[in-house]
Amino acid sequence: MMDITELYYDPYSLALFMVSREMGGRRTMEFLENVYTEEKAFLYPDYARDKKAFFSDTLYWMEYLIDKETLDAEFPVVEKDFKAAGKTFVRESMMSDYPDIDLFFMFMRLRILYVDKQDYERMKLRTLLRNYGYKKRSPAIVKHINECLIFYHIQPYLRNYEQCQIEHVDLDDMITFRV
Image (cartoon, rainbow, N blue to C red; front, side, top):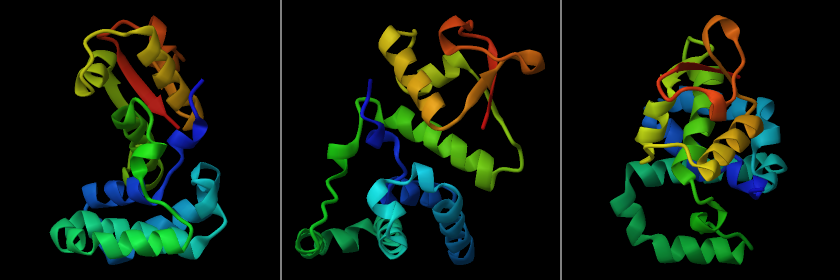
């Protein structure tokens, strides 16, 4: 079983999401407020208890992703400030062996709930696997996908709202994912 903390929303992953969606200032703040109030169970525990840190760290990472070169020059100072505050932002220590798939399902949940007008996403299993460098299902990747689906409360369906399990669908079946 994986360490569940690998799947929590953290400021860096949320910043990646917001930058990828090109959210403006007002939309960013509305999104963060919604995530903080409605998705608290999915927030990294330190941030679920500290709204100010959640907002400031997420906005910092968003700015960092937008203007990386300028902020890289300040990296030693920022790192020192984090250490002085008793925090660390070595993201790699919190990431799983499948970070792209973790983010895929996290982003899927956020898109369905807060961004897209549709309440579902559809794709073939083959497409999902191919996007992350896999051609076939291995027991390890299927297990990890299922853990992500369970954690993010995402249910896969085939046609006619027929619930399905990733390990039993055909690679070319169209899967509908709903929160």
